[in-house]
Length: 195
Ligand code: GTP
Ligand code: MG
Image (cartoon, rainbow, N blue to C red):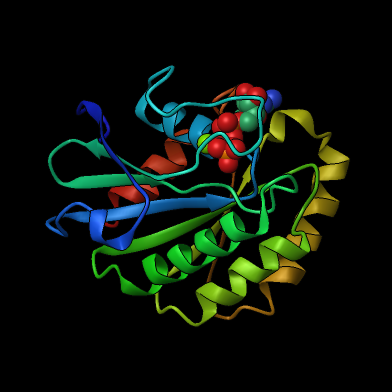
């Protein structure tokens, strides 16, 4: 599945701009700067397919990528970006809500959580939104290369406790480092298993 070529399809700012729902898709949600775009690059084995950056709020559109002919990878704009003006935040929340509950071909939403920080309030808001949206969702910890094994145990405890409040969440938590490659093959396998 992932041996096939990935290409950028389009950036979308409204539901009306979504590409035809003619194949399955998975999306990547998470706080600004958590590593969504970098993870898509790691999964597809590319360096700069999805634009990653140190500037939070870099990805402002819903970005669609082809992964071979049968799958879309969807990079969502980050939430919890403190400097974003309120109207922008509200517009984005509306779009996210519409997307998560209104995209019939969305097979799984991956919620990315920074392994150094665990589940924050803004993450919990997204988890609550997902509770009501009928899409299966799964937690992916990012940047595990930045966390010592001992601290990782604490993060995992905290994330498991947070997920326990969301029975619809898929129980397996995927630990990843886009930098070092940890968990990338596992995540590819999970995505391949959905098609
Ligand atoms: P927005 O588009 O603003 O929502 O951010 P994003 O979630 O797409 O984050 P992005 O992929 O742009 O990554 C943010 C920063 O984190 C970049 O400087 C990345 O290099 C860094 N980063 C991402 N993944 C990892 C990782 O696994 N390990 C380390 N050490 N750094 C990472
Ligand atoms: Mg991004």
